[in-house]
Figure 1 (tube, rainbow, N blue to C red):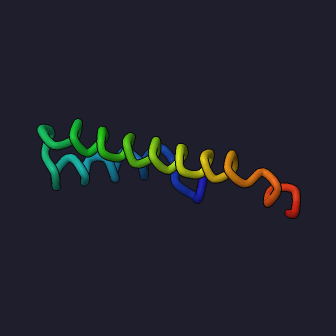
Figure 2: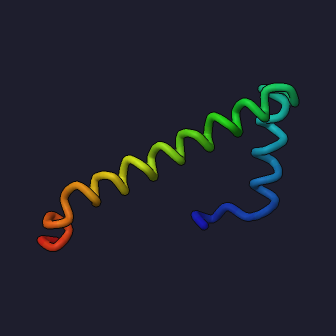
Figure 3: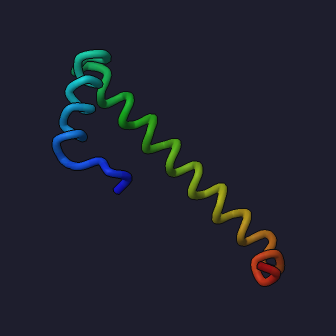
Amino acid sequence: MFGIGMPELIIILVIILIIFGAGKLPEIGAGVGKAIKNFKSATSSTEEKDPEKLDEK
């Protein structure tokens, strides 16, 4: 996974915790979740609108 293992992920999470603090982490997580959900719905709605474009690939 892009050369990122468990130790690197733990270090990144600790740095994020230090920068933003424990109180902001739930808000950041919710924002990231909403962004991913919106991205998935936008890509799936594009496929539903133009199924002919998928056949051309």
